[in-house]
Image (cartoon, rainbow, N blue to C red; front, side, top):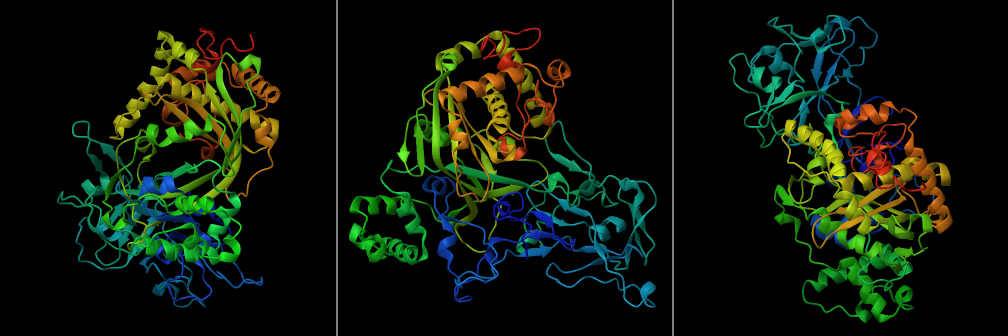
Length: 635
């Protein structure tokens, strides 16, 4: 099982289903599927599922699931409450290949073995205790999300169907490269270096992927494709046929989690108190409500009195309308059953998904789960911003809805409508996904519509943003991924969010990893957005003490902007950052004037993994000081 060194939030990302991690004893494991995260009905009389179930009606409809569940937390059982003791998240030992550091022997072991693997080689027969074998550092992956043990036997014998079952050894012949790693078969004395097993290329004509492992494993030229293995579900094979490439088990391209997040929007502002929301999540109320919802599908009419019967003692103080609205918040919405899920699904565009959040945040909602106050704009910012809001309370749900390997799908998925491949987390037909909930606060800012329209249509601004867009096009073309338009509006808002977060870290004492950006950017007619939300994002948090919200008052917000814009005018690495940055820097060279000295953040705080940043579009460049949206701010 996973030990306490991994927090519950990390079981959504980065150590979710299908991800690899290392236990405290050095064992490499892969997080198992969701089927065994919780006891089955009848297995544990003290288990209560209700405290793990969470709901967000918008996110449930978007992902077509019935609910979300918090990852189980381990409880030793020293309290008076016996419920949910001893829960753990199962993991499987992977990779299965082990090798002896002394005799170099390779041995394939089952996924589920718990005891240490001892070397059975005759060379250790005189030893008091055979040495413990270590797991190999190599695995193979494919672009459809599968992962498998490295095919040592097939590779050394140069065939996908080897008949020789001799003992294999993995030896090193000097050097730190794969060329020095050699697989040897004791029986037939064949040997082969691992050189090139991680190489891959995209064909320029048909955009197909070609790898050394697939194209050159067999001596007769026949390709060696992925077997469709899914060890996190204990499945050794399945339909696939994609090219395989080797990878180090700890490499960055082995696992890319796809996390979907949602700011909770009440169906009716102020209709349901947080107290009633909490009661609906308690086991002694939730169980009855769940049974009622099941009866509703059979034709039972749900009234306030029927809801109140779930627990009359606790629900008696609440009015009929509040009970009905709370029930609708939890169970409302038509969610298609997961039995109809296809391998491919289509998500709504980001403009459509975030537009309701944008429309509500820019106003002053007064719900206990989403509350905002208008502090007014300070005079220096009135020409650059249309709105500022103190978001005194919000609730965000983050769920793991899939993952990819080989290449990050976030570039493709973030562009809006498009097909994505659903990664199975269950062997069964369960209709839930792992998630965690963050309660916090934030600052919402919105740029001036008139000023932004005039700025983003300038030829020099469009030309500057085109440098970022052209580099991004080169990256996605090389990876065989769909294109996406990077606009001046997007680069401006994204960079501004980073500059403000870096300043807020110094001003109000949060760590940069505990703040997070949420961008509301669209130029689509009728769905125009130009806002950003900076909010607390520390996982497993029960809220904050208002330090971030206070920064949105007129006097403090003006000071934050003054400091952020002035700091952006000169980076500690300038003139290199500003001048050399025009040739591209940062991840995939998709940044211009942006580096660790001025605009980069921890990746957990950034929606775009520190891509698409440029101080030049915010404050201007050395040779064109009037280029930036805020060039004249404070002047």
